[in-house]
Image (cartoon, rainbow, N blue to C red; front, side, top):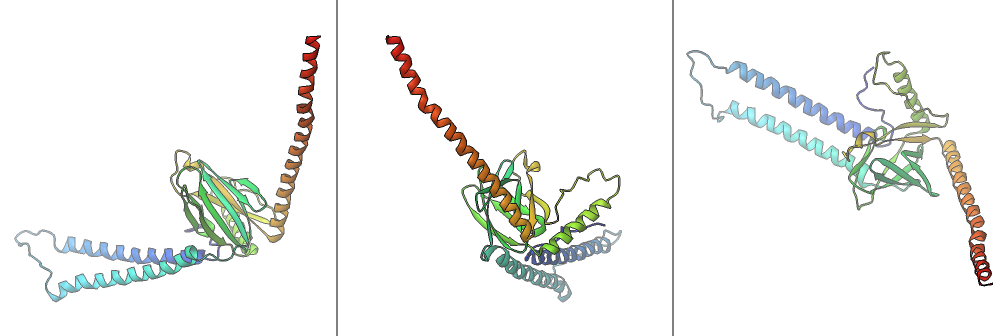
Length: 282
């Protein structure tokens, strides 16, 4: 079954979809009507033998109606789009609700680095809890990028020299999981000769993963700058954080042990050199 848009899984994604379809229907209607009028004019006023061309100044009442009625419609369409866009923009971009989770996202050619509270760092993999407000502080270490999470309708250009904070809040974990299962079912029911099919990332019972992409041409590796967002249940997110924290603590302990082992060797080195010098003098 053909799907027009990815699943809508954030608190403001429905508003963005409504705006998208509103603009699409209005512009589609305008396009179809305009084409029909043009085709009619081309057929009705085509060149005919023995018939002189008319000079139409557009000054009669009917002719003026053909100008002002479409103009009035387009003004109304534009006002509707502007008003709706302003409401959605304010909700998704201008408001910044209190954060439950804060993440730092660093873009580079051609990967994403996500740093979370507790100094947990992941490459091309953003982990968030379902149903909580997530702040993402975005920055770039080289050129223009754009962080796009299609299922949340989240998209923000990432600009060198600036830190831009955006936010999203997913729907409940049950809705997230159901949407992912629907995507898996669609994928499994694809035609056997679908040569563009790819394997979907595997999820456990407490998580569901979706695509992240760079939506700004950022160099020759732009096409491979893919990542994923892993949405966890509350239990799954706590377990993931605990696992990552334990790994960090273990690495720090190993590093401290290595430094302690290296310290006596560094202290013994000058004593050996001194002994050698005395032996030479003797």
